[in-house]
Image (cartoon, rainbow, N blue to C red):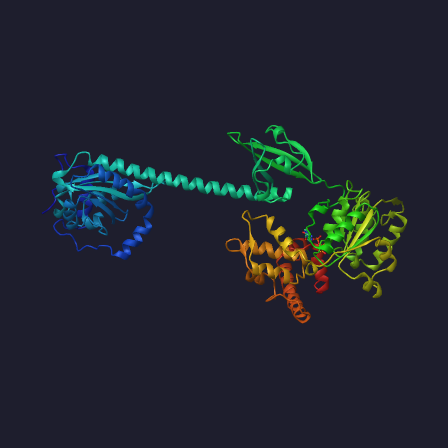
Length: 620
Ligand SMILES: Nc1ncnc2c1ncn2[C@@H]1O[C@H](COP(=O)(O)OP(=O)(O)OP(=O)(O)O)[C@@H](O)[C@H]1O
C-alpha cells in the first residue's frame, strides 16, 4: 500500500510528512520490513558500556513511572542516538506483541530501518514526537501508538531516546507529556551527577593547589586550632601534618596570636630566626581562616642565613650524642673549629647549629665552599677587591665573605681543597685579624669566627704537602669528628624521622621488618643525605605506604645484600662509582653544565658535586 501524501486535510503533522518524504526518497517499501539486524550479546554489551551512565540514572526513574502506570498495556524503552533499543519495561500482556514488532533490546529503530516511527523520527527531529497508527511508515506497525522524546546530556547533546508505545486503541492523550516529564527527570539526574563530579574534581584541584602552593598555608578554626596545613607550611614550621592538626597555632608557632589576625592587616612576627608576614583569608562562614605565612629571609649582607639549630640534629647514638654535647659547649667559646666527617654526615648542620648557639647568633652566618670556587677567584671571594683590581671586576669594588660575615661566623667548607696560595693569605688574615681587599691598600679590621669543615684527612694532606700545617693548627681550635652513618646505632630513628616529615605525603609510611633490617645493615656511603634520598624515593614509590626491603634494594645502586665484609664493599664502591660517574655525566649534559641545576637534579649539594667532579676528573 502506498502512503497518501496528500495532506490537505491538515491532520498530519509536518514532521510526519517530512519523515514520509525522507523514507520515500530512500526507496523504502512500506509493505516489507527488510531483514533486520538485531544486536548480538557482545555488541549489546558494548552499547551498555557506552551508555552506562544513561542506563544507571534512567532505570530508577523508569521503574517509578512503570509503577505509576502499572495495569495499562504499554512499553517503556530507552534507545541510543544510533537507534538501538537498550532497555525495555512493560506489561507482559503487551510485551509479546511489541517483541513481534521488534520493539525489543538490540533492535534498530532508525527511520532507515523502520521508516517513520517515534524513535527514529525523534532522532532526526531532535524533539518530542508522537506517531500514531497509520502514521507509521510500515504497515506492520500501524497497530502501534508511540510517543518519544530525546534525552539530552548536560552539554545539550543527544544522549538517548525515551519512548512509550502501546496498542493504538489504548493510546492515552497524556502519553507524550508523560514521556517529556520522565525524560526531563532523567536529564536532571544526569545534570546533578555531572555537577557533583565537577565539584569533586574542583575540590580535588583546589586541594592539590593548596597542598602544593609555594607559600605556607595554614588553616585554623575559630578557636585558633590548626585544621589543615600544606607541605610548604609543614616545612617552614618543621612539624609533620599529623603532629600539628588540632593543636593551637600559637603553641606551634610561638609569636603568632591567631586572635589578633585580621584580613585587613598583615602581622609580622619572628620565628626560627626569620621574619614572617601573615596574610589572612577569612572564609564565608568565618569558621575557618586560612593564614598565609610569608617568610622574609633575613639576608644580612651575606648569601646564606643560619637555618639549623641543635634541635634539628636527630640522634640517639651515644657517640653522636657525645659530639652534640661537646659542640654545644664549644659553641659559646669564641674559638675556631674544625669539623671533619664524610660527605652528608651533617657538617654544615653542626656549623649552623653552633653559630645559632653562639654569642654571634644575631650576626651573619656566611658559608663558602672552597672547592666550588675556581682557584683564581677564591681570594677575591674571601677578601673582596677594590675597583679596577682586575679585568671583569665590578667598577665600585666588592666586599668579600670576611667582610660580609663581620661580627658573625664564616663557614669554610671543604677547606682541604683550598689552594696553597689562598691558604697563605688566609693564615695571614687569621693571625692579623685584618683583611685588605685585592688591589687595595687599606687594611680593614675583621671580627669573624671561623668554622672549617673537611671530609679529607688533613694530617695526610699535610704529609702530602697539599695543606699547610700552620693553617691547620690555626683553624683547629677544636676538632669535632662526625661519625659516618654505618657506625651509628640509631639508623631506624633517623629513618623514622625522615619518613615523618616527607613533604609530599600525608599518610604515615611504614617500614617492613626486612626493610628495617636492611637499613641498619647497609653501609650508606652517602650517609644521611643518601638515606634521606633513598627513603624519600621509596616513600613515593611504596605500595600501600609500606616500604619493603626489595624496594630499598632497587634504590640503592649495586646493592643486592647488606655489605659488611671489606671485599664486598670494594666491589660495591667500584660499581657505585661507575654508576655515579655515568649519572653525573648524563645530568650535566642535560643541564648544559649548570652546576646548580645539576646538583638539584642529583639531589646533592653543590659542594659535593664539585668534589665528585674533581675526584672523577670530570672538570673541563
Ligand atoms: N643527625 C642529623 N639529623 C638531621 N638531619 C641531618 C643529620 N645529619 C645530616 N642531616 C641532614 O643531611 C643533609 C646533609 O647534611 P650537611 O649538608 O650538613 O652534610 P655535610 O657533611 O656538610 O655534607 P657535604 O660534605 O656533602 O657538604 C642535610 O639536609 C642535613 O640536614
